[in-house]
Image (cartoon, rainbow, N blue to C red; front, top):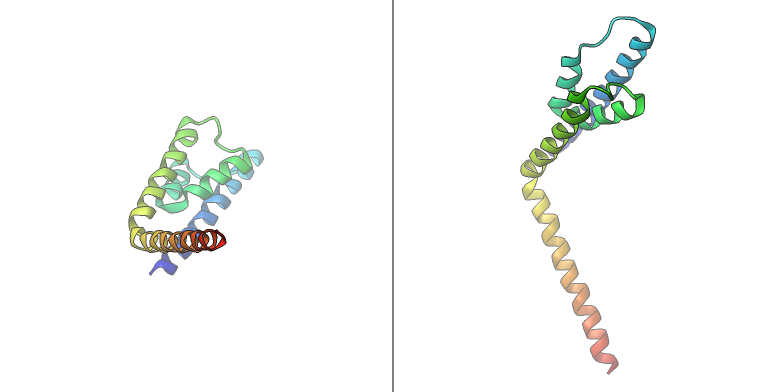
Length: 116
């Protein structure tokens, strides 16, 4: 399940990044454009990071407030949702880190105690 979710996130972010690039290219050439609602929808359904990278890389939609402030808000929301959905896995890694930290502390404390 997690692998499918991660694959989805990678694919949708690549699609969003490419869509912003294609829209910028079409804007320069005076051709058909991708509607702003579609670009925002790509960000909202999981492609926030790809959209933000596309905005920065292609220098596209940088003057539009909805893109300048909306996409970062979408990214923050997506991070919060991902943390919530993955909280059990995150908790396991935090616990493993804490156990490892205690073991390292005990090891160094033992070494210092044996030196004296």
